[in-house]
Length: 482
Image 1: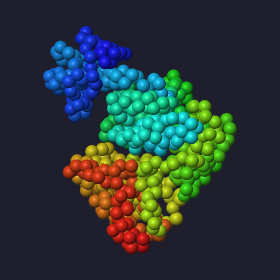
Image 2: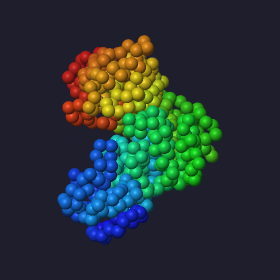
Image 3: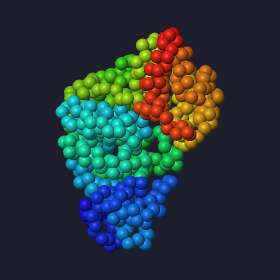
Image 4: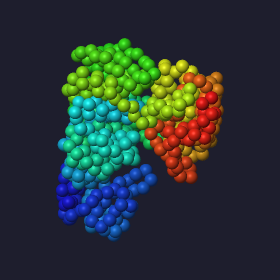
């Protein structure tokens, strides 16, 4: 593809030779002869530092944000924004041929996107999905490396969706992706907001930066759907030109409201009130399932689907791996896996389990290393205050010492009376919890969710909690069933 075609809608500050490029990348490790290399400055590595080397390897040109004194350079204002547009051009601008639905917020994105996909598919639409657990083109599954992929992978997925005749794409849009320009230049038909609580401050540094990143999604959409029960629900769309629709449980003036909510171990039930009233039965238990299903229903109703179609689709919906996932054990206690890894996420899942628990709620959790340290004692306090027993262990310690992370967690638990057990090794911790389970206990394995790995200071290992539970039951069936 000609360089001029790749640079369409990119403001270029200098003259350049209109050469052919066979591929584009911002990863210096992937550059081969004939590639266009885009220099991006990250937290650790600056692509500008290897621009000359990329040309020597065989790159036809390098895109930079300042003059490097190179013959084959293309100077732009912002290389992140430019890279997003270049990748879009390279794949034929596929997003323009899709009806894009983007979700952002701290919690609920994954389950809600799956619910929206299932609703749209139940009414006969072919749908793509991009998110934390996996990427999908119709029924085809592709691995997810990030919640929102980098521009090259993202546009490649859009291209696959268009080629497979998908009409809609539902995607999670993370705050990091927004801040890094991964969706720069992409316009959404509808953008939805779930909630906003403390998370990712290790990256954004301040709450204001985190909020501003989330708000960027609504600057590029036709319709914004927002949760008005969240204190940031209206702030995040304030002053923007998009059309605004609202949903909520507590705020009865919302465009879409859930009332007369009932909870059970096999799901939630409520009346959905809009211009009509219908009864929603969502087969995913927990209070947050009300918000997730209400958001999904509100999206579909805003898109013009009927109340009967939406309610019928939700009733048939499936759960999501790693989100309030019940692991079969054949015992008299229950093991549930959930991705909750933020203070609010942990509070939501434990509170929801308390509403359906017949016995104790035993929460097994840790906190990630090389991430926001301030949330560790907060999560410790929440777990201790809401659980009957806690097992404090490791999560993904990364480069940090797991015991030091646990010490931070215990700071938040020291003034509570809830008993707890510290077991640093996560597999040993799960074993301990299962071997000491009582009849009707719910053992919540929080933090890992859909992940099938654990990141340790020594490297990444395979770690799937479903397999761990199964192996423990196989090793000690008599103890596990006591």
